[in-house]
Image (cartoon, rainbow, N blue to C red; front, side, top):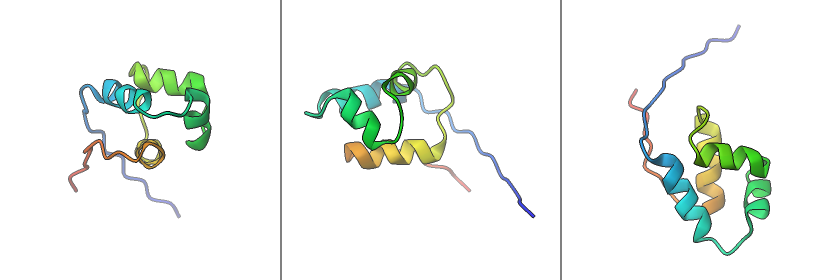
Length: 75
């Protein structure tokens, strides 16, 4: 049996923070997106805040960029 709990947290400006961190990284967008197991187009959608960002994806982006964006989920 699976039990799911879903919590949504507002993180205003997160897309811009991700974009700034990416732009300060010497790697190409293609290389960064690939390291995060996503397409460049998906990465652009995240930066534009056009979709809900799963926590797992956010953590992968933080890992790839070596940044903590400070998004916390209060339990």
